[in-house]
Length: 145
Image (cartoon, rainbow, N blue to C red):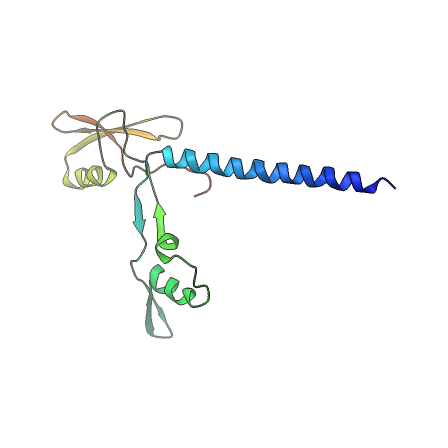
């Protein structure tokens, strides 16, 4: 009674939607691969706390190894590695955020100027008059991090 035609149309639409989703996924991966890589850090420093008078310590990778017994496909390096901060700028000279922090603690940074809506670009001026962008690792505001 005419019901077969509607099912075929839905299957074609579903197939189109699946193809579009795959294409979108491919485009996102391609875009991500084209972007400068952000600094990463393997979170493996032990965190310690006292429980009933006994000190307990754990790290991301040690906990991951335990959960790997439950899910052998778990990639502990990927699970415990986080991206942070900006990638190294390609359009101008810069120092890393770590170099900047060392300059602050060493007393060689005279001032910092922030630019942009969220202060997402900063320049350090050193006591010798040198002014340079703070680049790789500089904290960025990301809504989902």
